[in-house]
Image (cartoon, rainbow, N blue to C red):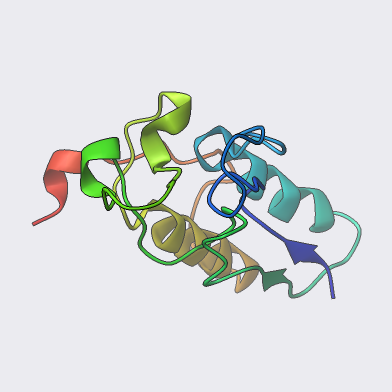
Length: 120
């Protein structure tokens, strides 16, 4: 089973390291991996790592903006690369990938991030 992930950085665990060792590109990195395994016959995949905040590969909700992150420690928020994403963007993107793998309707085009103001 192929494993895909949002990107990678040691910045949350090792301050002073390169913040974008494997850039997330606002989810485009994850999306591209998922669709690169489809044509070679993958019928399922594992989206890693749900809770790996220290490696900046977390799919669950994380700080969207610097001001949303705790003052203590070193945290890499979603806006570190200039993206304006909701805190649950990678959950939403994972859901879209899952729908397409199940054959549910949808476009194979990368979905544009929905505005952060829609948090509701």
